[in-house]
Image 1 (cartoon, helix red, strand yellow):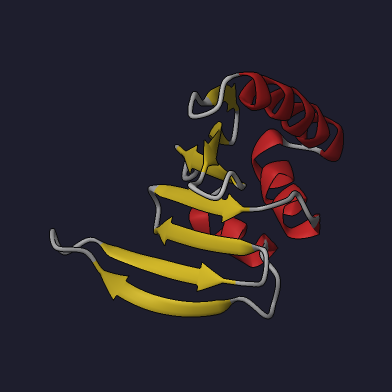
Image 2 (cartoon, rainbow, N blue to C red):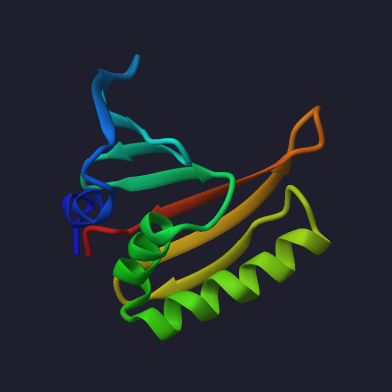
Length: 121
């Protein structure tokens, strides 16, 4: 699986912007009502979201391999990060590695950040 497969799992209404970082690395930035996405092609994907919706589940399923594994990851990760804000929950799968962190903002709203690496192997 590669980062293009993950991008294809995101909603069709995602607004994309092509960007180049200071070191010359290309990245794609995407946005929907619930998601902020950063894709560094062939390297990593980072999703920031307020709540798990079908698009988040689809991306996790791409990495975990099936819906049951995806739901298991999300359930376990959610329990872990609620107890340990700002500390990531990490799991490795054949299609990549995922880390979920819950970040508490100044307004005490929780933002979830899902980081996927090794998505091209």
